[in-house]
Length: 242
Image (cartoon, rainbow, N blue to C red; front, side):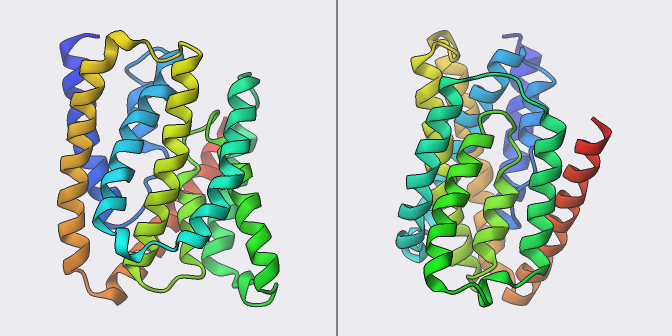
């Protein structure tokens, strides 16, 4: 891997991780950066390592606010979906997936459906969301906004949203890392470079956490809804365009 590629990805990882920790998911910007500089067979595994490390850092910072019952239900579905997708790693229409994910992000932001479907139904829905996003994340790296807005729809406080989302995404990303490593899609010769990217992600996330803790709650709620609405619309347009 050439030195200028390493520098660009490292700096980009710091910036994206900072924003992600402060406001919310960036809709595949990290993957777009990686995919523009690395071969296709490396982009998703490398993105999984970087995003997983950043998510793990956020999880540690907000671990006391995590909704563990939700995380367990989500991860149960996620590991099934991810395992099946990695096992049948084939190319499907990414445009359709992006439109579906973008629509789901907007749906979570503006339709209070969890208020009237009942607690038991929501529990099953948590597993289904984990299953579907776990399957899709192998093919497209923009499932983060869908998980984030789904969690935010029923959790008011920012630290509960960020901590629970970070726990779920850490599990989802590192499930991919393990799967791709077993299938040799993630060569060990890149381990030192991945450590550099991971450290940039940790540093960027730590900076973002400082900002989010100083933010007024109302500003955070408004900002994350604004950002995820833009991301959802962007994913729909990108999917239709492709």
